[in-house]
Length: 582
Image 1 (tube, rainbow, N blue to C red):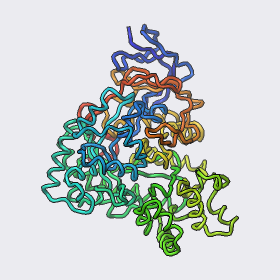
Image 2 (cartoon, rainbow, N blue to C red):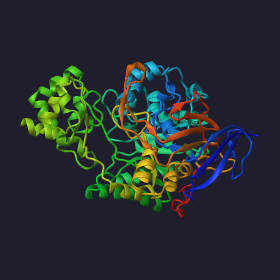
Image 3 (spheres, rainbow, N blue to C red):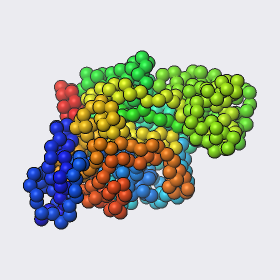
Image 4 (cartoon, helix red, strand yellow):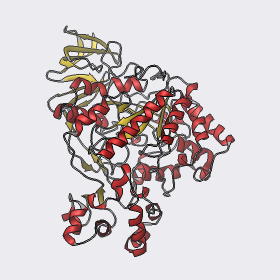
């Protein structure tokens, strides 16, 4: 007798093949039969009218901290995700020392938008090694999770305060390499770093990894070939790719002897500049292939709705002169914003912004997303440029005035434009490209800034169901088997006999992401952006149902994914374009 029978559903198996009617049977956490026959089982789920698909994957999250206070890793699990990867951009929270924790908390609060109160109240910070960190999570998560070891955590542990500002000695690099070997041996899935111009710590200084030499970076990636099933990721210096970016990404892949993925590629407004940028980004993959390397960009199914504010300063602080503003205390910041000399400096810095970050300096196109003062309530949902025109002000002056009247707590959305229906077929070309993988949700991070966490239901609901940019079968493939093979996951991402019983059952007529709203459920009383899932009926991990009609069952069958056990090495042969995983 089987443990579970899923009866009367329509199977989309994750390979991209056409759907078919079948019953799915599970025992011992594995799929044991896919059959037209009615077999005996202890439990049954009526899947009539539902699609039975492999559990979805999210290949770029930052759930490293949230895992301590939220076993479901929401909202991902509620959107059908059964496996996530974390520890990206160099921002793991292990290895750790009592001296590094007070640095990492404000760094994560600034660079990844995790409220400091939540990090203080929700995370114990009582481990040292990577293995101890993973041990705190073992058996306590509803879904599967794997975590990379981050460069900034390594650098801070080895170099202390010198991690910001100094180059590492060879002895220090060797110590970091030893710690990385130890972390991977204890279960870290690989190594990540950031060279991104947008990544600053709690002191508004570039994060530790940005102070490393390329020799240090490449030596650390050179540890990965020593271990089976390891993964490489990097945040490049800028999303405006140059020949230097091409060389960096190629050298990282060659040093790691692994495909390297980077974050993030998006196509939203279909402007000539945007197409040119995306072409340059895709060119990095072609350049790498010629050198026998493999570079893959993560791409989104929707327009990212970014939010900024004068409290954290994230993204605003990337503009020339603005970084200095966010080194000031809040009171000093307010004084600077009314000082004519400061305002001229800030306006001049904003005018220098170009390329993908140009929206930061386009104050007229800033949408007022949310306000706190009654005086500003009438501005909510409107563009700063429209408000400025009504009041006879310059957009920059209006932008600053609104923020000051709100005690700097106003949340703005830069470069806001409605999504274009014609963007979906254009994005579909990226989804289907072997140089990309659908990902980059950043779920668990930027909790008040970015609402890209629902990539799975956005892809299937908006991309396939609403706009018909790709078939439902292909959409499922893009968030199941394709990323599973790219990340080297063993026996996950497909409905096949003997494979892990990670499954999602959804209504093909209603699947999608709901409206984004603020949800006050963080430790310390904080709020986060959130969207409920539509049409997700059941989510199953390892044969155990974790989500039933939008409610958590209380079960925690998730597995901590470890290299070699849960993953295999993904090769990068120069003569096989994408065939190793696509």
